[in-house]
Image (tube, rainbow, N blue to C red):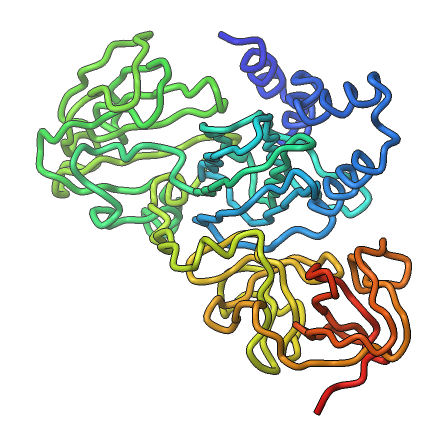
Length: 448
């Protein structure tokens, strides 16, 4: 038994803490995450005060403060640029009984670690987010099963000076394997909570109907802690899930195949479907119950998500490049779906930097750094100018649409330049040297 598991069992057994305290103690036991250790190393080496590190820290905070709101499952691709520190936050909801999986594949141009943090977001705004799982991934995954319903956030951030493409998959699956071999939720005919015995009690499990003798299997790795026969459940078996501090109850078995104290793995046969006990007048079925601080509805622990990953259908060569909106009224959304929250309504020819893709949506950044999704079909390349213009007076082209941004090129008075897009009071232009930069629109005289 690992130290982490032992701590959880001890807390739950003596009843001194609820699920939130358990998660907090688990986080304290884990100590510093790889992300935090990396930041400590930057401080120790004297790099914490550099502009590049400060930009990295801002991105880390903004990924938590301003995440993308997504639904699971999600497949999202993106691009890391060594010259532009970035972090991406994905926020979603997950109930108890589900298994969250975060998988990442990285194809680096410059090597380095990518930090992946899974955080539980607080129900009380005065509390901060709590890390529940963390790792450095370039080709692997982390999994986490919530002890209670909640909102979660995955932050993905590479080390400084890392560049390359990545593919992130966020999944949500049943936490338990189905307990009757060859069957599924379509065979559940008596759900949790229905009235029994004229309303004197309620059903503390689900009934899964199958042929007599169908194998009943372990839904989780654990230890059989009771094999018995009772008047109500007939031939029964209890399986202890020590990792999550819960007991699984199998009843009305035709016969038991496991013994008291036996350790089993997922899929091991525990017994066979029957109708013993008070089920002798009904067709054969398994009564399956979960007890975790009281009877718990097995449905979310067993039911498949019913959603599939959207196939990627965007021009991946556009990652890291600029595009613009084709017309007015195009919505920037918080997730790759027309049902997602609207973050902004964009005007025609608004420049956007493509930083990834999901389904048939681009994930983009606006000129002021906001991130969201836009339907790829509503964009066009930024190569051809939308108009030609003259610079009214000598001016510096800036890297962002802001007067305090660094100057990347200069244009003399009456210089003729290409206008590539517009964002508010600024225009994205191609300067005399061929570099792109921003100028106030008031400084331009359009060549009609």
